[in-house]
Length: 129
Image (cartoon, rainbow, N blue to C red):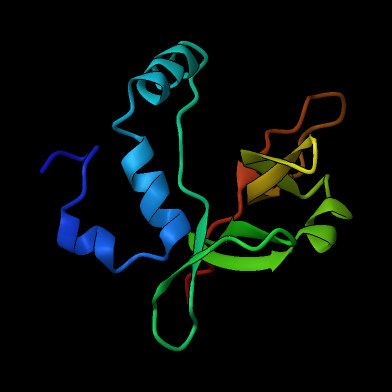
């Protein structure tokens, strides 16, 4: 198995939509899209989330965005994240309802900088205690 493939037994455990996503990566047209995207520093991902109780794979809901903050992943309301656009950097996109929408975002912090300097924007890190 390579990093681009999954065993049949593993794929059987996925919901049908995610099983289809896994199989699509092997299609020549998808591999061509991936080749073209890589020229822009982009890739392909399988939008998903997990059942909080069982850990099972689930398709990412239309109104949910995957969020990484403090090096931990959570799933939040897309509307909530959109209202805080200055705090979240989109890192994954989907085509939904005829438009580009954010599927995943990283929470950012803006450290204070000397007056006049462009402040560096950094990923929100885990608070060490």
